[in-house]
Image (cartoon, rainbow, N blue to C red):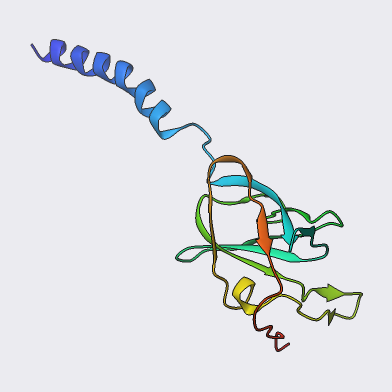
Amino acid sequence: MEICQRLRFKIVCLLLCPLIVSMVGCGASDYGSVTGTVLAEGKPLANAMVTFTPEPAGRPSSGVTDENGVYNLIYTQDQKGALIGQHTVRVSTAVAEGDYGKMSKEKLPAKYNIASEIKKEVKAGRNVIDIEVDFQGKVIQPGY
């Protein structure tokens, strides 16, 4: 009787283990790649810092827009993308210039950076998240 129970247990384990592993995922990622375009009043916004901060907390991801307004997020030096989940998104034109850390002036209203109202969700896999901003509203210069 005891041998039958052990054999039954082994058979159940052999059948269920692959199912459990496939549900959990082998090497599943907690990140999604994120790229997109930032448009300011319909035109590409170059040299803007785009930052995705996970909610309620977590390490942010960021990237700088190119001359076409395109950004690609980086989480760490070795990890591109952003954590999966809901994020507060900030777009700022106050970025470091040159070797001495001089900052350019903020051109965008606080509703896009310091007091951002932008919320976006990052999903597993590839995410294309375009962002549209305008110049309407109070601009607050960062206090560096």
